[in-house]
Length: 63
Ligand SMILES: [Zn+2]
Image 1 (cartoon, rainbow, N blue to C red):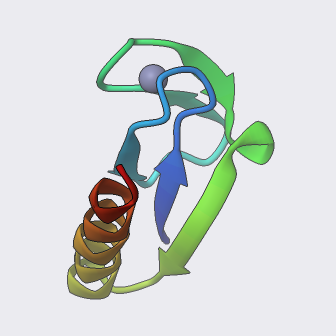
Image 2 (image 1 turned 45 degrees about the vertical axis):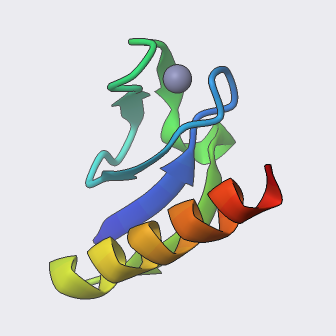
């Protein structure tokens, strides 16, 4: 399962397959997956990637 999550610390959206512990690739923070804000989940990598791009675009348009 691919998850699109937002890091609660640095707010960066990213793709992860982590089940229990997730390490943010931007700020290296280690967080329990259950505490993450999951924006999207899919079994398909391409779908999750598309969702990530879409969410990042929405995020940047808010600035
Ligand atoms: Zn982070």
